[in-house]
Image 1 (cartoon, rainbow, N blue to C red):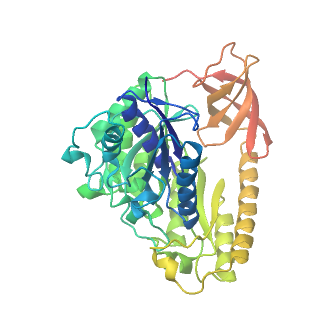
Image 2: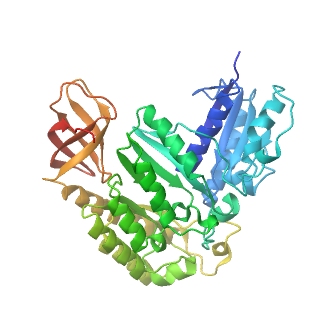
Image 3: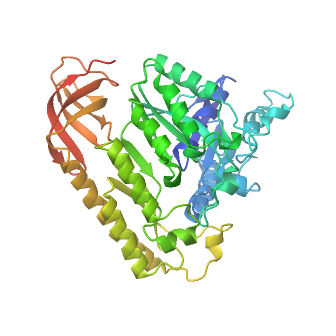
Length: 438
């Protein structure tokens, strides 16, 4: 009888990708993934450490795994356990640098295999550990990881310590995975990593290496849309923007990490740009992609943030006109420089500022939806009914619902039609038709 394994994944897309990768490796050893945490032989908690709250939740979920599945081998992996290798409650603990040892350790624990680990299974901290083709989907989109690690050491961020320095996946492996996913029917690909624009930085390359890889991906027959993960403003050079513009498969939705709209706060954060550079990058991207959507992350209540700095941040967000802002109250993370900074902000003040910025985000998101009335959009179908109704996302990453004139719809179909009205943050249309693929 096959062993059953359950995954609980916390944190980002990269963590989700790595859970899928470990699931794939275990399936090759005869394990079966289950959705029932009470009926598993192995309970894997993939942890997060991006904030103090994420740390707390990671510890909580490891303890919960022991209560929910007392009969199971509890495995803790990921960023939190990289920082806390002696985590109580887990039978096996691996971080990010020794993640490749997870499967051999588990096989030994279950007495399935007693052979020793190969030396090259233990160096994920110094090179990109290759899992091979991994199936991870978000609706009808497939997620592909191309890079790990970060060299920036922003004062609030633990990631360079929990993930290590930049390590890039080989272009051959990336292209092979996408070719395999195209054969499975996927047409849209989300390219992700911890610090995407640093792809091949350890090889001495600049951000144009990412542009070159995206050109190679676009050349694969069957790839219709390429969506990018988080991008660093200072890496968005004129050359890279030009390469994105020339690449007809790039979705005009850019997640540019801002964190604050105050130059003085950005300096305390040790970010590598100011608002003038950010504004210029957005202008150039809008010139290259006139209908582009922009999303971002912003932190409220960073140590020492004054009311004036907060007002500057809100005003800058409004000026840019983001489609959506992921807003977070500052969470002091032990091990970072910001943890010991003076003038920590009161929790009530942080919550008030966070609520204010989230309200601004909601207003801009509704305004952005209204801008699409009368526009013709391309939609990748995610959900559909027999009556011709469908839902999906346009290239600009706006949720679209509507009706299609074609008799049969399938998940993954590309439709084209005109937007006639809005429904909050989403848009609606009718009489869409299937789009002929190139």
